[in-house]
Length: 209
Image 1 (cartoon, rainbow, N blue to C red):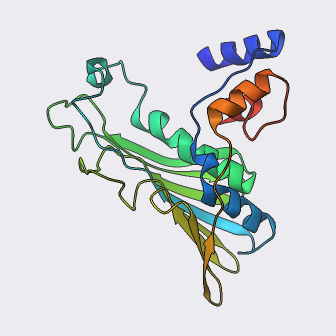
Image 2 (image 1 turned 60 degrees about the vertical axis):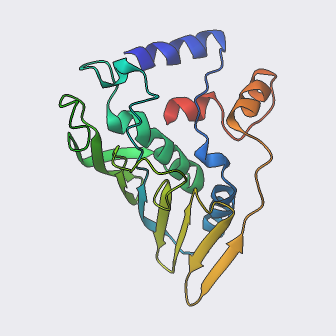
């Protein structure tokens, strides 16, 4: 109901809405979109990704772990991965096959469902994701943090946040493809949209994701 109200207000008054959907600004994301659009791996049939976070008790607000306050692990994290897949493939979320949340790592917060896994459909693509708060409190970026695999009829491609300036493409051979950095970001594009310019992400994208 809250989302419907936001959609209604934005359409009636032409207000602009944005979210911190920053994964689509990764260098590898833009290159992946180009390659898939060119048919470099054929027709995409499966996407799998991992986006595990660490609990970070010291820095998260205490309400985060209170029963009924948090919006849900899948709702909180998966939107970033789903938005990126939407950007790359052009497909929208079309169905839910399975989803599970449970408590495993937040042992001192038994009401907090810190783990989340799901399988959904995006057009003709089956998407599997793990967005659990299962990562160790590691001083750096894990290779599994926002790691994406796209499987097509003639090949597959892979990239992750840690090595986002490189994309791996596998067909008959392995190709290591350098990716130029994106010159924009979600906040700059939000301001540009308010000013009336065409941007990489817009209100329609945000509300759909």
